[in-house]
Length: 77
Image (cartoon, rainbow, N blue to C red; front, side):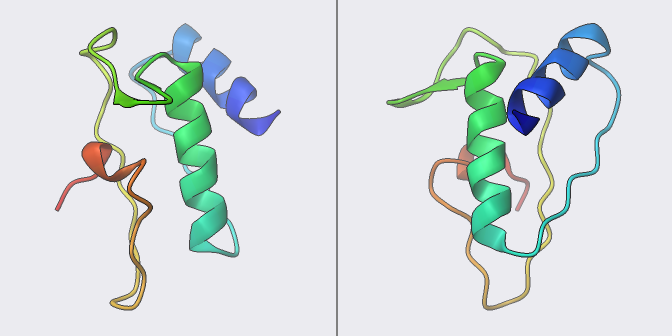
């Protein structure tokens, strides 16, 4: 539900920024993967070329945290 709401918002206002927070990195990665899928930027095989205008997602983690492989292509180093 949350990913669909965010995807719909981004369809309407694609240049707006959205802050999403959660108690765990796993939850954030799962939500990011769902949003990217909902907006057509990724499918079950990984990134698609259908949406070249997908902005960079920023995820700040502690030194112990590692982002999930499904969202790494959209993160800034």
